[in-house]
Image 1 (cartoon, rainbow, N blue to C red):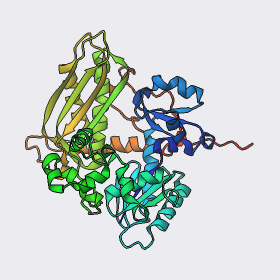
Image 2: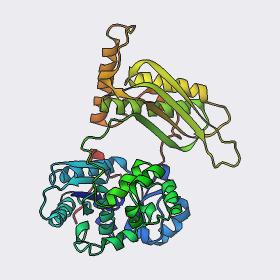
Image 3: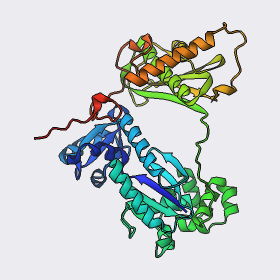
Image 4: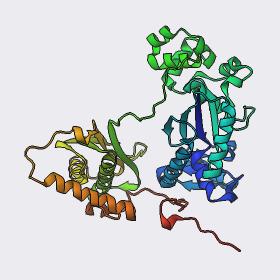
Length: 421
């Protein structure tokens, strides 16, 4: 048996956590640069606000509804996610953190899964303040469906639904469009419909070998899981990462080469920080830039450059040098850049990388110690307390975040203020 625990409207719930007055009010959270809606409370969903909708198109609707609108606060969301997962780890010997707001639990041997699910939901809410729904089923695919039903209040046990307790699971599967199933992409959904497989029940009854021949092993496994056959095991250890990317849309158009280099310097430095945190090294760096594809007055321009290293590295200094060289190759005067980023592909564990036979003696150790000091200072005093001088040119490239809540559980300056009357 698997349980899928999913936080309800997670980003919106995080913003409400320190503002009880927001209960009952529509809450939306915006993407980078306050462009699109990436999270909605149930009240905002009831207003007809679609996921991913451009904010400006619904700004008046939200204003009239007295909605609370926030810029993304990923530091807060990440820390609260960590706390939720720590609580969930107390309830099962094996868990799989699937995403920032979802976690699978192994419930093998549990005699009363519904009672445990209710205890999980109560404890997470009591200890972290985040509401969750729990779906329980013999496979991960069915647990996903059970969780969705629990969120819609279709279970007899409030926020918990055990698939085995449904009076008519066939009717439930028949009401689920095939495109709504976990793991079915849009193209696969269209292909399945062309074969007359329009809902989850029809997919469950389809011949597995024919599904594999037409759509591959992923769709075949989903069909088998709908039958109750476990094909997707719990992944307690995340597979090793193959790439690291840091990319941002700019808060304003960037036209000066120094400002574009500043942005890419910041991205390369952050990528190096990620490499070191995960014990990885990168053999090459790709830097990419692009203008606004929707600017009718200018021709769209996008390009990339890849630069290799003599040996794989995690030294931000080397990454920054390569990234800025890439910008010098790509920059074109007269263009207004709206996005850039760096991509580190084919990363490998640091212990598996070859040594540089021609490097100056002690240079690798000095670089390692330099980066250790950089990381330690920024962990203690806040990100970018120490940074590369190249990041200081201009500020238009920095993310626009005009509606930030300012609340933080990881910085003293962001602690919520409480006033007693």
